Length: 114
Length: 110
Image (cartoon, rainbow over all chains, first blue to last red; front, side, top):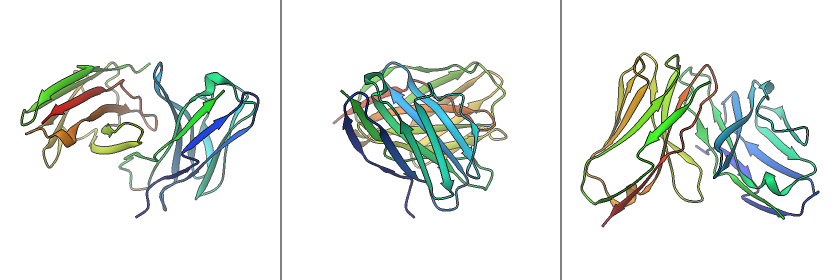
């Protein structure tokens, strides 16, 4: 089975540009999470979707960040405008409906904002 | 607010040793606890999931135990190998939010 798929794997952009990160969860999984990992703060939850509906976005750092999940197989995380302090690895993760709540991660998108 | 501490922060051992990685958390009202492995530049790989009604889980050379009342989990790695070199993260969860420790960076020397 395919795991969680993220794109792009690497993104280098200049300050002020719009960045869009993409995620395809594992087929059949109904919960999706976006995390951010930095050396200083470790792994932080940004937003949690259940059945395509945002349930908790309290971790989204500011209005420059937005996330959508238009259907069960696709989600985006957008940063507009980007700033150097947004440089981090952004992970998407999902879990299924079995009740186990075992979290599966994608390979991550490494973002560098110059 | 849940806080997760992992000790030691780094560990370097010769191949073949049995290892103990420790994780402590401040809020014992957890749903699950999951151990992950992260290789450099990669995502997190799930190693073991301990559900709240369980006290331990085993997979191959890995065994994880959970003591909710004391806020502790331990990951045992038997007969360590160079391929075990990675960062190990523990993450207790509430109803949906996993809170991650800062990890133990393990290096197993051949």
